Amino acid sequence: MSRSVIETTLADHETLLRFRTGETLFREGEEPRGVYVLHSGTVQLLFAARNGNPKPLREAQPGQILGLSCLVTQRPHDCTATAAEPCEVAFIERGEFLRTLDDSPTVWFSVLRVLSRDVNAAYDDMRVIAAR
Image (cartoon, rainbow, N blue to C red; front, top):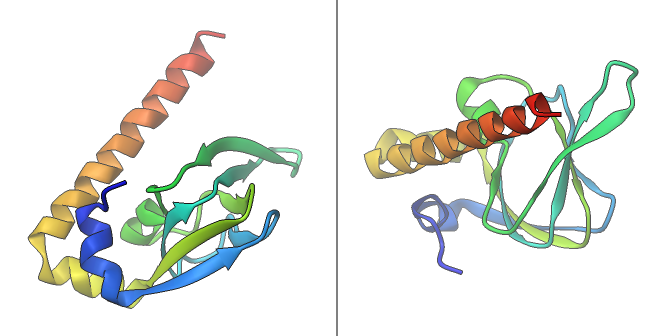
């Protein structure tokens, strides 16, 4: 798998983390500390339902960047990310990530592309829900 512009540019600033099945990367409502690039394994994204029980939202696959939209918009995480199986994740600290955005229009454009793709995926999910 080829690495994205974001991954390549940030490679010198990443910390490699390993998570066992069931371990949490971040929780809904927490302030984002950085972004997570999933290198291997899968991560289940869950959100709190009205009754407080976590509900599956979707499953993240290798190559996906987690926590990006909340970091850029300076909002708390809108879901909880839990390892669905053993996984390896590159963590890029918030300050390093934001400094890289300031220094690189190419990375900004890549972030815009990733966020646009996420918005379109959310619209697709809404269409499926509306069709039920």
